[in-house]
Image (tube, rainbow, N blue to C red; front, side, top):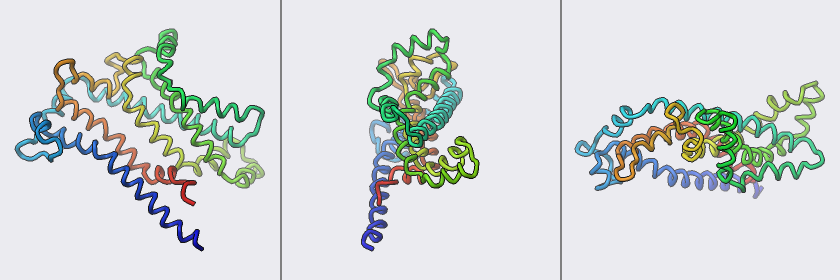
Length: 279
């Protein structure tokens, strides 16, 4: 009885902590948004004040839309991010299912090998990756970025999803096998729907680094036709002069997809984070 009474309190506490962290995390976003609608003098004079009739200005957004092909950069970022997330979730979930479901010699070593990418950053191999892309003719293509980001996101996806896969009832899967379902059908129809909160968590955690990354787009796809939004925004940052109105406006427009994804998957994200932590 006491355990049952504690559950609502612990759940409310966990949600309260997450809400607090969300507010703290969104405060810089709020500052960027309000300053993107100000004149340059107002940005430096009163950075935390809301724009009024005297300080309101759309010059930043006008500059962004006139200089460079912003919509092309936005399209490239969307293609790379969506394709990378799809491959990370697909291959990560399949690998996690295999590790959690099938016991074979070297299962633990295979899990540790797949998790090594969490401890060893992929940027260490930038030179080798660049040489590989040059030899295969993939430099200045979106496919190069998709492959790199898929490899970057798989270790975390396998690590998180494998723990959730182990919690799926064996009786449910065995019942499917008795009914004649194939392993692929069991995976896609029975297991995947039950681990959606974990998959939403993996998707959000991987989307932000992919969407905001500057390193690999600069190294692997710096051409005008393959620039991502983050790389395209760098045109407004100079060595001696920076157009802060344009930079803040570009950042504001780049933030929108991340916020939309967070709103869509927020319920699943919270369930994925708190699942197993609140008993």
